[in-house]
Length: 293
Image 1 (cartoon, rainbow, N blue to C red):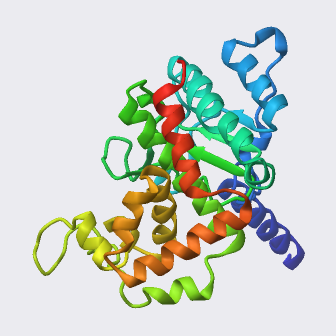
Image 2: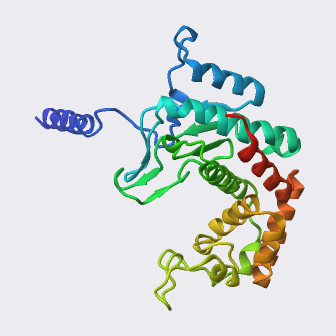
Image 3: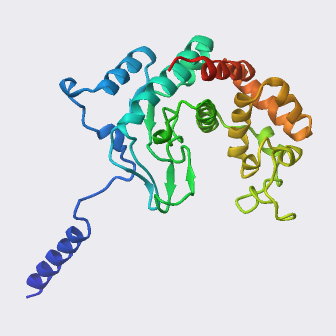
């Protein structure tokens, strides 16, 4: 009788496990992008052929077809519209990012260019896709080999949009550099204890007003978002040096000894990797305002 009860109990427990895990064991570290179906060449469209060209010429795989990706329970991103992904890939990725970078800064291109680039249609959404709480590349750019950008469905040949997106791309890539090499103890100690945090990086709690760039620069950050946390401090430093000419950057850093120290560290770090950020700014301006669409 005891053996029978034991057998029934075992069968019950096994049944419960199966019911609670209908899909079997799930590996949370699974890279779902690597599981995507390879499309037969007979089914290729114009974007597939362009992606193949980019893969062969630059060694970067462009990923635009996938099911919506969940980063966590309330953070996700979705694939782009084809009619936006095609011109985006041709103009932003081929003509404005990869080609100029390879030609002007071959050392940096060869060692630091990711081997995968993910296109997200909207921005990276938090909690609900209709909300405005979004980010350009959150959750996609923590790997050394993969870069991603949101907002592809907003693609436009408007010069302001192109410049803003391209400098944001370098901002997101700066997060990869940060993850790969670290900022260094010296950098992190410059503004230790002075960061605004989540509650104060946009609105100054003392005045109740939105922080201006000039105010943030006096505090040691290129922009208010840089004062959110050290990792954004680093990335926004790269972003601003790619967005503004050297003369303007020198005006900004003159407003704070701390900002000048951080500027010199970031500038030298990139110089050691093979890219002069001030020269890169000139390249970015050139491709934005002269590229043939």
